[in-house]
Image 1 (cartoon, rainbow over the protein chains, first blue to last red):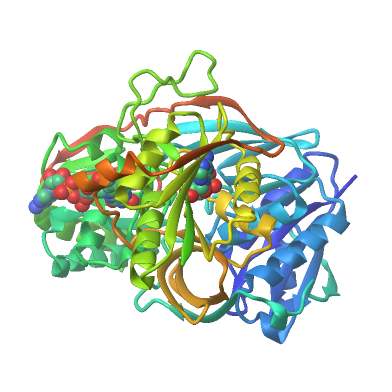
Image 2 (cartoon, rainbow over the protein chains, first blue to last red):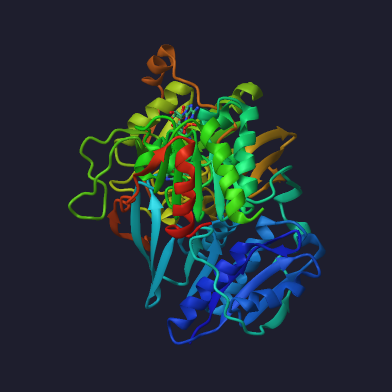
Length: 328
Length: 250
Ligand SMILES: Cc1cc2nc3c(=O)[nH]c(=O)nc-3n(C[C@H](O)[C@H](O)[C@H](O)COP(=O)(O)OP(=O)(O)OC[C@H]3O[C@@H](n4cnc5c(N)ncnc54)[C@H](O)[C@@H]3O)c2cc1C
Ligand SMILES: Nc1ncnc2c1ncn2[C@@H]1O[C@H](COP(=O)(O)O)[C@@H](O)[C@H]1O
């Protein structure tokens, strides 16, 4: 029984949540086909090997660790060369990456080096022999495509949050490996990674997103949205393009067709009309709440729960009630 | 400065879609087409770079059926110097097959930069750019929202979850363009007239092997939603109750 490959993403020496999702997907693939091993690849600065145990918690049998002082930051060419080499020599049926910002860069490069295609931004998958059948929202999420990727191996990137990480603890073996090319030989070099000020919880990882639109009328009124997010305690703040275009929020907060695509447990749309380009980024949220003064706003068509009303009256009240419900 | 921009013709996304009777494709009835949004940004970036350099040309390239000629003419009207249609009756969903065709065309073009959209609006895959770069063994930076060039090198910024990266690279290179970098210009009447006389070459696309195939397409299930809990702040307690007991998110 062949093994299954998972790429384990890290940043600043810590594993990202999506690393547990790719390992979970690989575990599920292995167990669904008679129980092969799961091999996770982890690259980083010296010391990153200490994170191997955490990958074992989600079902990795073997963690291949590539440590090099030149890998403190993401290095597209070294990562792609190392992943491709490992996948080529490992004889894997399937290889899972995340469709995170890093994974969207790394997965297509790796697949092309292997001379195979890639199923990108997958929300569900199932192995059929050596092929994988995937679901992928296409056409700005207005169409769900079911596709078959003939494997050799089947390389898949998973939409962050779509495959929930499941613990299946084991103690993994750790194997040290050298990078497939010297980091100093890379042509493309990440010279700086800057944490965005105020971005406490990332949109891709937050279970709750509170998002604001033009209905808030001015940048300073985003305080309402921030307070509601703080009341939830596990929420990130998003925005529509109308808002990011006006500079009320940074462009990186934009959700939609040309912004981030998110699938939180709960999405609260505050003063957002629900334009198709916005829906493209959030329609796969598990539960959607909308607050809008216009009862005919399109957002109500996809919202599970709506309140017709003025955000300046409804949101402070909601913040208060959520705070109570959360017990703080 | 010689820049190639790979542009894709896609259906306008605002329209209502339905699935064709083969259950594998969109019903083409009533569809209108346009340049994929990020590709428009990429074209604008290319035009500005060549204008700034004071010399050079922008070449627009599209893989697809004859319908893409309309899209290429639009690129010419915006200011591209010439265009190439890599003719294929059907554009596969498989990004590697498309990247193979583009790499074959771009290989000996002598370009300083090859620009792509961050992702096409129809496939929503974001793979053709970086795959083409790998096939050509060129440096590549994806999803950039800021770019500076000087002395044969570039510095780009790309956004990550909660952070951003500054990336340096040598030219020639492949870049995929995110939003926020430039808003595409509108073609002027003069540009539209000039476009009619600009060269548009047609060559057969040398598509790669297709291993990713569409089995079926469906419209997403309608969200059962649409429940209005009530009006004004008085509806809040009921909403919170539903979030706690029914949706179980509180
Ligand atoms: C190519 C392209 C790509 C795009 N990509 C994106 C994208 O990625 N993301 C995105 O979001 N948009 C995108 N857009 C823009 C999109 O079409 C909409 O213009 C945008 O989403 C509207 O933002 P909004 O809902 O904040 O503003 P509006 O549409 O102006 O809606 C404001 C809403 O607030 C309500 N309101 C006003 N005052 C109050 C009040 N006091 N209380 C309660 N409600 C109130 C109004 O009833 C209205 O429904 C794109 C557009 C194009 C053409
Ligand atoms: N048929 C095509 N012709 C020209 N360029 C394309 C084509 N398909 C994709 N591209 C380019 O590749 C980018 C990414 O496409 P995709 O990987 O399908 O999301 C697009 O934004 C275009 O720049």
